[in-house]
Length: 409
Image: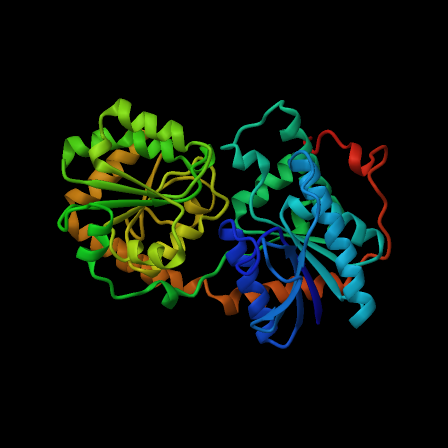
Protein backbone atom coordinates (compact mmCIF):
# COMPACT_ATOMS: atom_id res chain seq x y z
CA UNK A 1 0.00 0.00 0.00
CA UNK A 2 1.23 3.50 -0.82
CA UNK A 3 0.55 5.68 2.22
CA UNK A 4 0.94 9.43 2.76
CA UNK A 5 1.15 10.51 6.41
CA UNK A 6 0.72 14.18 7.32
CA UNK A 7 1.91 15.50 10.69
CA UNK A 8 3.33 18.75 12.02
CA UNK A 9 6.10 16.94 13.92
CA UNK A 10 8.26 13.82 13.86
CA UNK A 11 11.47 12.57 15.43
CA UNK A 12 13.37 13.46 12.25
CA UNK A 13 12.09 16.97 11.58
CA UNK A 14 10.68 19.35 14.19
CA UNK A 15 10.04 17.33 17.36
CA UNK A 16 7.60 18.76 19.91
CA UNK A 17 6.22 15.90 22.01
CA UNK A 18 4.46 12.56 22.08
CA UNK A 19 2.72 13.00 18.74
CA UNK A 20 6.08 13.05 16.97
CA UNK A 21 7.05 9.75 18.57
CA UNK A 22 3.78 8.04 17.65
CA UNK A 23 3.84 9.32 14.07
CA UNK A 24 7.46 8.31 13.49
CA UNK A 25 7.14 4.85 15.00
CA UNK A 26 3.88 4.17 13.16
CA UNK A 27 5.46 5.12 9.83
CA UNK A 28 8.46 2.88 10.53
CA UNK A 29 6.32 -0.09 11.53
CA UNK A 30 4.24 0.26 8.36
CA UNK A 31 7.42 0.43 6.27
CA UNK A 32 8.76 -2.72 8.00
CA UNK A 33 5.70 -4.54 6.70
CA UNK A 34 6.48 -3.60 3.12
CA UNK A 35 4.29 -0.53 2.67
CA UNK A 36 5.56 2.48 0.72
CA UNK A 37 5.37 5.24 3.33
CA UNK A 38 5.89 8.98 2.86
CA UNK A 39 5.80 11.28 5.87
CA UNK A 40 4.99 14.90 5.02
CA UNK A 41 6.02 17.19 7.86
CA UNK A 42 7.68 20.56 8.44
CA UNK A 43 11.38 21.19 8.12
CA UNK A 44 13.63 22.11 11.02
CA UNK A 45 16.34 24.71 10.50
CA UNK A 46 19.07 23.45 8.18
CA UNK A 47 17.37 20.17 7.24
CA UNK A 48 17.28 18.81 3.71
CA UNK A 49 13.88 18.66 2.02
CA UNK A 50 13.97 14.95 1.23
CA UNK A 51 15.52 12.07 3.12
CA UNK A 52 14.92 8.40 3.79
CA UNK A 53 15.25 7.10 7.35
CA UNK A 54 14.39 3.56 8.46
CA UNK A 55 12.67 2.95 5.09
CA UNK A 56 10.36 5.96 5.55
CA UNK A 57 10.50 8.74 2.95
CA UNK A 58 10.50 12.16 4.64
CA UNK A 59 9.23 15.22 2.81
CA UNK A 60 10.04 18.23 4.99
CA UNK A 61 8.08 21.27 3.94
CA UNK A 62 9.09 24.90 4.31
CA UNK A 63 6.49 27.67 4.38
CA UNK A 64 5.72 31.20 5.55
CA UNK A 65 4.78 30.93 9.26
CA UNK A 66 2.19 33.68 8.88
CA UNK A 67 0.96 36.05 11.55
CA UNK A 68 -0.80 33.65 13.91
CA UNK A 69 -1.39 29.97 14.67
CA UNK A 70 -4.23 29.64 12.15
CA UNK A 71 -2.24 31.06 9.24
CA UNK A 72 0.78 28.98 10.31
CA UNK A 73 -1.07 25.71 9.89
CA UNK A 74 -3.01 26.87 6.85
CA UNK A 75 0.29 27.65 5.11
CA UNK A 76 1.78 24.37 6.31
CA UNK A 77 -1.17 22.48 4.83
CA UNK A 78 -0.76 24.28 1.50
CA UNK A 79 2.93 23.33 1.43
CA UNK A 80 2.07 19.70 2.18
CA UNK A 81 -0.54 19.62 -0.59
CA UNK A 82 1.95 21.05 -3.07
CA UNK A 83 4.67 18.60 -2.04
CA UNK A 84 2.38 15.57 -2.14
CA UNK A 85 1.27 16.53 -5.64
CA UNK A 86 4.92 16.73 -6.73
CA UNK A 87 5.70 13.31 -5.26
CA UNK A 88 2.59 11.78 -6.83
CA UNK A 89 3.54 13.14 -10.26
CA UNK A 90 7.01 11.68 -9.92
CA UNK A 91 6.31 8.26 -8.41
CA UNK A 92 2.57 7.64 -8.54
CA UNK A 93 -0.68 8.42 -6.77
CA UNK A 94 -1.07 7.44 -3.13
CA UNK A 95 -3.64 4.86 -2.06
CA UNK A 96 -4.55 6.72 1.12
CA UNK A 97 -3.82 9.90 3.07
CA UNK A 98 -3.58 9.72 6.88
CA UNK A 99 -3.46 13.01 8.78
CA UNK A 100 -2.73 13.64 12.45
CA UNK A 101 -4.64 16.25 14.47
CA UNK A 102 -6.25 19.52 13.40
CA UNK A 103 -3.00 21.02 12.09
CA UNK A 104 -3.47 19.27 8.72
CA UNK A 105 -7.27 19.62 8.39
CA UNK A 106 -7.00 22.08 5.48
CA UNK A 107 -4.79 19.62 3.58
CA UNK A 108 -7.21 16.74 4.22
CA UNK A 109 -10.04 18.90 2.88
CA UNK A 110 -8.13 19.40 -0.39
CA UNK A 111 -7.18 15.75 -0.75
CA UNK A 112 -10.75 14.61 -0.12
CA UNK A 113 -11.95 16.92 -2.91
CA UNK A 114 -9.41 15.23 -5.18
CA UNK A 115 -10.88 11.82 -4.41
CA UNK A 116 -8.26 10.52 -2.01
CA UNK A 117 -9.42 8.19 0.77
CA UNK A 118 -8.74 10.14 3.96
CA UNK A 119 -8.15 9.04 7.57
CA UNK A 120 -7.68 11.42 10.51
CA UNK A 121 -6.19 10.57 13.90
CA UNK A 122 -7.29 12.77 16.78
CA UNK A 123 -4.71 12.67 19.56
CA UNK A 124 -6.50 15.37 21.55
CA UNK A 125 -9.01 18.19 21.08
CA UNK A 126 -8.77 21.93 21.64
CA UNK A 127 -11.40 21.48 24.33
CA UNK A 128 -9.17 18.94 26.04
CA UNK A 129 -5.97 20.97 25.62
CA UNK A 130 -7.70 23.72 27.58
CA UNK A 131 -8.28 21.34 30.43
CA UNK A 132 -11.78 20.26 29.43
CA UNK A 133 -13.29 23.72 29.15
CA UNK A 134 -15.13 25.54 26.37
CA UNK A 135 -14.15 29.10 25.47
CA UNK A 136 -15.65 32.06 23.67
CA UNK A 137 -12.23 33.19 22.46
CA UNK A 138 -11.88 33.60 18.71
CA UNK A 139 -8.80 31.36 18.51
CA UNK A 140 -10.56 28.53 20.35
CA UNK A 141 -13.53 28.72 17.99
CA UNK A 142 -11.37 28.77 14.87
CA UNK A 143 -9.19 25.86 15.96
CA UNK A 144 -12.29 23.90 16.95
CA UNK A 145 -13.71 24.65 13.52
CA UNK A 146 -10.63 23.11 11.87
CA UNK A 147 -10.96 20.06 14.11
CA UNK A 148 -14.60 19.66 13.17
CA UNK A 149 -13.79 20.10 9.48
CA UNK A 150 -11.16 17.36 9.66
CA UNK A 151 -13.67 14.97 11.17
CA UNK A 152 -16.33 15.71 8.57
CA UNK A 153 -14.10 15.24 5.53
CA UNK A 154 -12.43 12.05 6.75
CA UNK A 155 -13.69 8.63 5.67
CA UNK A 156 -12.74 7.22 9.05
CA UNK A 157 -11.44 8.63 12.30
CA UNK A 158 -8.98 7.10 14.74
CA UNK A 159 -8.61 8.07 18.37
CA UNK A 160 -6.90 6.61 21.41
CA UNK A 161 -9.63 5.98 23.99
CA UNK A 162 -13.36 5.58 24.55
CA UNK A 163 -13.35 8.88 26.43
CA UNK A 164 -11.83 10.68 23.46
CA UNK A 165 -14.33 9.11 21.08
CA UNK A 166 -17.21 10.28 23.27
CA UNK A 167 -15.71 13.77 23.44
CA UNK A 168 -15.32 14.04 19.66
CA UNK A 169 -18.80 12.74 18.93
CA UNK A 170 -20.30 15.24 21.35
CA UNK A 171 -18.23 18.24 20.23
CA UNK A 172 -18.46 17.73 16.48
CA UNK A 173 -21.51 15.51 15.97
CA UNK A 174 -19.32 12.78 14.48
CA UNK A 175 -21.17 9.45 14.10
CA UNK A 176 -19.89 6.99 16.70
CA UNK A 177 -19.62 4.22 14.11
CA UNK A 178 -17.17 6.33 12.11
CA UNK A 179 -14.57 6.28 14.91
CA UNK A 180 -12.08 3.47 15.54
CA UNK A 181 -10.25 3.24 18.87
CA UNK A 182 -6.57 2.32 18.53
CA UNK A 183 -4.52 2.69 21.70
CA UNK A 184 -0.98 4.03 21.61
CA UNK A 185 1.96 1.64 21.73
CA UNK A 186 5.55 1.62 22.92
CA UNK A 187 8.60 -0.64 22.83
CA UNK A 188 9.10 -1.35 26.57
CA UNK A 189 12.70 -2.50 26.20
CA UNK A 190 13.71 0.98 25.01
CA UNK A 191 12.83 2.36 28.44
CA UNK A 192 14.49 -0.28 30.59
CA UNK A 193 18.02 0.58 31.57
CA UNK A 194 20.49 -0.10 34.34
CA UNK A 195 21.26 3.27 35.91
CA UNK A 196 23.34 4.55 38.80
CA UNK A 197 20.77 6.31 41.04
CA UNK A 198 23.51 8.17 42.91
CA UNK A 199 24.87 9.67 39.69
CA UNK A 200 21.44 10.59 38.31
CA UNK A 201 20.24 12.17 41.56
CA UNK A 202 23.50 14.05 42.08
CA UNK A 203 23.02 15.72 38.70
CA UNK A 204 19.85 17.37 40.03
CA UNK A 205 21.04 18.03 43.56
CA UNK A 206 18.96 15.25 45.09
CA UNK A 207 20.33 13.21 48.03
CA UNK A 208 20.78 9.53 47.25
CA UNK A 209 18.19 8.26 49.71
CA UNK A 210 15.60 11.01 49.13
CA UNK A 211 12.29 9.65 47.76
CA UNK A 212 11.53 11.21 44.37
CA UNK A 213 8.33 12.03 42.50
CA UNK A 214 8.76 12.61 38.75
CA UNK A 215 6.52 14.60 36.40
CA UNK A 216 7.12 15.01 32.68
CA UNK A 217 4.88 16.90 30.30
CA UNK A 218 4.01 20.27 28.90
CA UNK A 219 3.73 22.91 31.62
CA UNK A 220 0.19 23.74 30.56
CA UNK A 221 -3.20 23.85 32.29
CA UNK A 222 -4.32 20.57 30.67
CA UNK A 223 -1.41 18.63 32.19
CA UNK A 224 -2.06 19.88 35.73
CA UNK A 225 1.49 20.68 36.94
CA UNK A 226 -0.03 23.34 39.20
CA UNK A 227 -2.13 20.66 40.90
CA UNK A 228 1.02 18.71 41.70
CA UNK A 229 2.79 21.82 43.00
CA UNK A 230 -0.14 22.61 45.28
CA UNK A 231 -0.05 19.03 46.58
CA UNK A 232 3.59 19.29 47.68
CA UNK A 233 3.06 20.88 51.14
CA UNK A 234 0.75 18.02 52.15
CA UNK A 235 3.30 15.46 50.97
CA UNK A 236 6.11 17.17 52.88
CA UNK A 237 3.99 17.20 56.03
CA UNK A 238 3.90 13.43 55.77
CA UNK A 239 7.53 12.97 54.72
CA UNK A 240 9.85 15.96 54.71
CA UNK A 241 12.63 14.49 52.52
CA UNK A 242 10.59 13.93 49.32
CA UNK A 243 11.91 15.67 46.19
CA UNK A 244 9.85 16.58 43.12
CA UNK A 245 11.40 16.63 39.64
CA UNK A 246 9.36 18.39 36.95
CA UNK A 247 10.53 18.05 33.34
CA UNK A 248 9.01 20.00 30.46
CA UNK A 249 8.41 23.50 29.23
CA UNK A 250 5.31 25.59 28.64
CA UNK A 251 3.42 28.78 29.34
CA UNK A 252 2.89 27.99 33.05
CA UNK A 253 6.60 27.87 33.88
CA UNK A 254 6.84 31.33 35.47
CA UNK A 255 3.56 30.88 37.33
CA UNK A 256 4.72 27.55 38.73
CA UNK A 257 8.02 28.99 39.94
CA UNK A 258 6.19 31.82 41.69
CA UNK A 259 3.79 29.33 43.24
CA UNK A 260 6.68 27.24 44.57
CA UNK A 261 8.19 30.33 46.21
CA UNK A 262 4.86 31.35 47.71
CA UNK A 263 4.32 27.89 49.18
CA UNK A 264 7.86 27.85 50.55
CA UNK A 265 8.71 24.47 49.01
CA UNK A 266 11.59 25.53 46.77
CA UNK A 267 14.01 23.16 48.47
CA UNK A 268 11.88 20.18 47.43
CA UNK A 269 11.34 21.10 43.78
CA UNK A 270 13.59 20.91 40.72
CA UNK A 271 12.44 22.37 37.39
CA UNK A 272 14.42 20.52 34.73
CA UNK A 273 13.08 22.17 31.58
CA UNK A 274 12.98 20.13 28.38
CA UNK A 275 15.10 16.99 28.68
CA UNK A 276 16.40 14.68 25.92
CA UNK A 277 15.26 11.07 25.65
CA UNK A 278 18.33 9.61 27.35
CA UNK A 279 17.93 11.73 30.48
CA UNK A 280 14.22 10.96 30.53
CA UNK A 281 14.93 7.23 30.59
CA UNK A 282 17.51 7.74 33.35
CA UNK A 283 14.96 9.59 35.49
CA UNK A 284 12.22 7.03 34.86
CA UNK A 285 14.52 4.30 36.10
CA UNK A 286 15.64 6.33 39.13
CA UNK A 287 12.46 7.88 40.53
CA UNK A 288 10.18 6.25 43.09
CA UNK A 289 6.83 7.48 41.74
CA UNK A 290 5.64 8.93 38.43
CA UNK A 291 2.81 11.44 38.83
CA UNK A 292 0.39 12.27 36.00
CA UNK A 293 -1.87 15.06 37.38
CA UNK A 294 -3.69 15.89 34.13
CA UNK A 295 -7.06 17.63 34.04
CA UNK A 296 -7.72 16.09 30.64
CA UNK A 297 -5.78 13.17 29.10
CA UNK A 298 -7.00 11.39 25.96
CA UNK A 299 -4.56 8.54 26.55
CA UNK A 300 -1.40 9.29 28.53
CA UNK A 301 1.67 7.78 26.86
CA UNK A 302 3.72 8.56 29.99
CA UNK A 303 1.65 5.90 31.76
CA UNK A 304 3.00 3.22 29.40
CA UNK A 305 6.55 4.52 29.69
CA UNK A 306 6.39 4.44 33.49
CA UNK A 307 4.89 0.95 33.40
CA UNK A 308 7.70 -0.19 31.09
CA UNK A 309 10.22 0.58 33.84
CA UNK A 310 8.08 -0.92 36.60
CA UNK A 311 7.48 2.46 38.22
CA UNK A 312 4.28 3.00 40.22
CA UNK A 313 2.01 5.72 38.89
CA UNK A 314 -0.22 8.19 40.71
CA UNK A 315 -2.58 9.52 38.04
CA UNK A 316 -5.80 11.48 37.84
CA UNK A 317 -9.00 9.57 37.19
CA UNK A 318 -9.62 11.10 33.75
CA UNK A 319 -9.75 10.00 30.11
CA UNK A 320 -7.45 7.22 28.99
CA UNK A 321 -5.84 7.07 32.43
CA UNK A 322 -9.19 6.12 33.92
CA UNK A 323 -9.70 3.41 31.31
CA UNK A 324 -6.28 1.79 31.67
CA UNK A 325 -5.50 2.01 35.39
CA UNK A 326 -7.11 -0.35 37.87
CA UNK A 327 -6.89 1.40 41.21
CA UNK A 328 -4.36 -0.07 43.66
CA UNK A 329 -3.65 -2.88 41.17
CA UNK A 330 -1.46 -1.26 38.50
CA UNK A 331 -1.57 2.33 39.74
CA UNK A 332 -3.22 4.77 42.11
CA UNK A 333 -6.11 6.84 40.76
CA UNK A 334 -6.81 10.23 42.30
CA UNK A 335 -9.09 13.16 41.63
CA UNK A 336 -7.58 16.17 39.80
CA UNK A 337 -7.30 18.03 43.11
CA UNK A 338 -4.12 18.80 45.12
CA UNK A 339 -5.42 17.16 48.30
CA UNK A 340 -6.29 13.94 46.45
CA UNK A 341 -2.96 13.87 44.59
CA UNK A 342 -1.09 14.31 47.87
CA UNK A 343 -3.12 11.52 49.45
CA UNK A 344 -2.19 9.16 46.59
CA UNK A 345 1.52 9.96 46.82
CA UNK A 346 1.52 9.65 50.61
CA UNK A 347 -0.29 6.32 50.43
CA UNK A 348 2.45 4.82 48.28
CA UNK A 349 5.29 6.17 50.42
CA UNK A 350 3.52 4.82 53.51
CA UNK A 351 3.08 1.37 51.93
CA UNK A 352 6.34 0.29 50.23
CA UNK A 353 4.94 -3.15 49.43
CA UNK A 354 2.19 -1.47 47.35
CA UNK A 355 4.85 0.46 45.42
CA UNK A 356 6.44 -2.83 44.41
CA UNK A 357 3.14 -4.55 43.61
CA UNK A 358 1.57 -1.85 41.41
CA UNK A 359 4.89 -1.31 39.64
CA UNK A 360 5.11 -5.00 38.78
CA UNK A 361 1.49 -5.14 37.60
CA UNK A 362 2.02 -2.13 35.37
CA UNK A 363 5.11 -3.73 33.86
CA UNK A 364 2.99 -6.79 33.15
CA UNK A 365 0.11 -4.87 31.55
CA UNK A 366 2.27 -2.70 29.28
CA UNK A 367 2.95 -5.75 27.10
CA UNK A 368 -0.57 -5.38 25.69
CA UNK A 369 0.29 -1.99 24.18
CA UNK A 370 2.59 -3.27 21.45
CA UNK A 371 3.26 -2.13 17.91
CA UNK A 372 2.11 -5.37 16.30
CA UNK A 373 -1.36 -4.90 17.77
CA UNK A 374 -1.50 -1.22 16.81
CA UNK A 375 -0.45 -1.81 13.21
CA UNK A 376 -2.88 -4.71 12.81
CA UNK A 377 -5.76 -2.46 13.88
CA UNK A 378 -4.50 0.44 11.78
CA UNK A 379 -4.30 -1.67 8.62
CA UNK A 380 -7.82 -2.94 9.31
CA UNK A 381 -9.00 0.68 9.32
CA UNK A 382 -7.08 1.43 6.11
CA UNK A 383 -8.56 -1.57 4.30
CA UNK A 384 -12.03 -0.69 5.52
CA UNK A 385 -11.66 2.79 4.02
CA UNK A 386 -10.32 1.48 0.72
CA UNK A 387 -13.13 -1.04 0.43
CA UNK A 388 -15.80 1.60 0.88
CA UNK A 389 -13.93 4.60 -0.49
CA UNK A 390 -16.05 7.63 -1.20
CA UNK A 391 -15.98 9.00 -4.73
CA UNK A 392 -17.09 12.54 -3.91
CA UNK A 393 -17.21 15.08 -1.11
CA UNK A 394 -19.87 17.70 -0.56
CA UNK A 395 -18.90 20.59 1.77
CA UNK A 396 -21.24 21.30 4.66
CA UNK A 397 -24.10 23.41 3.37
CA UNK A 398 -23.49 27.11 3.85
CA UNK A 399 -19.88 26.79 5.01
CA UNK A 400 -16.63 27.89 3.40
CA UNK A 401 -13.32 26.43 4.38
CA UNK A 402 -11.52 29.63 5.35
CA UNK A 403 -14.53 31.35 6.89
CA UNK A 404 -15.59 28.75 9.43
CA UNK A 405 -15.95 30.32 12.85
CA UNK A 406 -17.15 27.42 14.93
CA UNK A 407 -16.85 23.66 14.76
CA UNK A 408 -18.81 23.12 17.96
CA UNK A 409 -22.43 22.01 18.09
